[in-house]
Amino acid sequence: MIAETTARLILVAGLSVLGSATALHAQGSAQEGPWDFVEFEVKSWGAPMSSWRILPNGGGSWTEAVREDGQLPNVPAAQAWHEIEPEVSNYTELETILERLPDPAPDSQDCENFMTDAAYGTLRMTRGATTTEIAWNSGCLDEDYVAFMGILKEADEHMQELGKAAPVSRVEPAASR
Image (cartoon, rainbow, N blue to C red; front, side):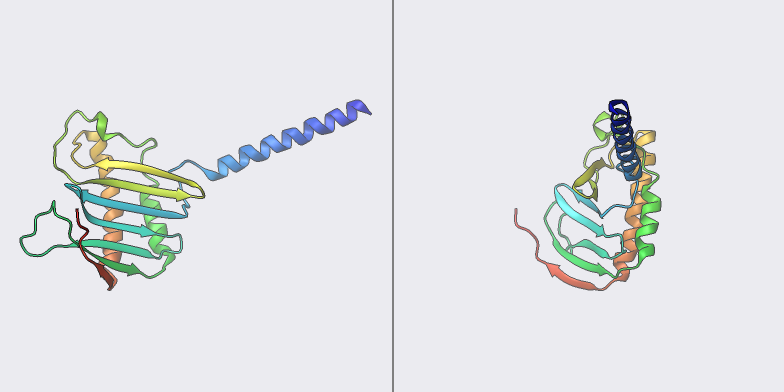
C-alpha cells in the first residue's frame, strides 16, 4: 500500500514537471510570437520621430513627428496619430519579420564601428506580465548589427506603410522640454 501510494505520488509529480516543461516550451523565447502587444519607437537627439504599436488582431497606431519648415530635429514636434484598422495579416506579417531577430539581440554598446548622432530607439514585445525590451542604435555599423538593424527597418517600414495609409485621428502638440 505504501509502495503504491509512493508510486502514484512520483507519477503525479512527474506529470506536473512534464506539464510545466510543456507550458514553458509552448511559451517560446521572448522573440517568438504571438505577443499580446508590440511597440516600437524611433528617436533622434532625444526627440520622438515616429512610433507604432500593434495588437494580434492587427489593429494599432502609427505616430509621426510633424515638423514646421525649418524646425530642427532635436526640438520636440507635434505628433500625428494614424489609427490602423484591425486586420490580422498586419500582425502576422510583422510577426514573420520579427521572428528573424537574433536571440539574444546584439548590443550597440559592444559596437566597434560606431557613428554618433544616429537614430535610436526601443522595440518592446509584451506577453502577459513580461515585456522584452530591445534597445537599438542605428549608429552601430558592425556587420552583425547592420543585419539586425535591417530586420528592425523592415518591421518599421511595414508598420509605416500601414500607418501612412490610415487617416490622422488626432494631432498632439509638441511636448515642452
